[in-house]
Image (cartoon, rainbow, N blue to C red; front, side):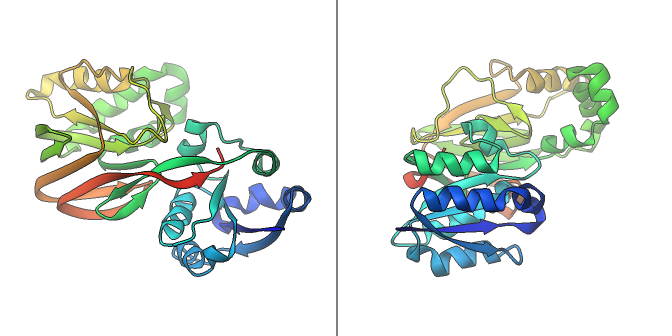
Length: 293
């Protein structure tokens, strides 16, 4: 019988998992798995547990948000014998699950694991730290959460435009140089992201280039600072419409990226603080793990 470790983040997954836990374990055990359950105790517990115990298991299933999945993957990457990974999404945005069609029902995830084979998936490294779907800098990721819900319902995309214009004077541009797969980009940027996902911050990416979790490529999107304040509305509109032909948006796909900034830049990695850097590298590890998606 195969061995499976079910890791539950009680902060994000307790309400989702608790009503279905007996059914989940029953499905997994009837599917041929000996199930061990672990409740995480703090932010570092998941990665530490996977690093310490992971080689004893054939599959590790993590229940929680995107950060929980990140910690699970980080732990698996440290192992010589890498278990397969399942994911029960239970966070607030769950961009990774929505990108790749992972069921939001814990029972359906369990059924999927016992009925399907995993796929080989790419994992990215930001300055040596693994990320599953995105590393980013800048303030635009906060706009959707700052926009009042009633305004969103009444005005739709216009609400984001208005909120973005309101916050634009407080957004600091970053002077940045990036080198990628033979290309070079210089400029002052308000926002940037390096991703391996179809969805970010609750929005689907609608670029024309195909996005895959196992094509060996990362997607780079940069939002350039307008030269004139009066052009701020045009820039925000281009961002909301995801118009990669706009002068304010730079898009590229790459296997490796180097960046340099004039001052330390704070980054997020899978939605969590990733540290501040004046320079660094981002690279992709092709087919680094096996995921049930």
